[in-house]
Figure: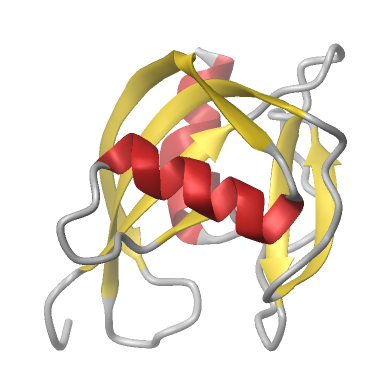
Length: 132
């Protein structure tokens, strides 16, 4: 792997049926959890709130945020790099709407098979834990 890990903060947001909200960024082929990179000096939940607002128009409920853990996997969009994700299970107010760099969103059941290609962090680290 080349270069430092890409550090992100992302959210597991679920609907009433237990499906997980996933997004595909413009120019990317794989779906991933909503979230993104921290701004300098930004705390994890501030990053998460900002990213959910910018990308989907959602308002994070910080009191609902529960750490799921820190996970590492090959980066979905940068060959040879790894992503290090701090992942929270959380709730957010509003109806998600595609904005910013998001090209598509999909509510995905946590059980395979999956109808779309997924980022390795989501497919091999997060969804197996949600099924456990």
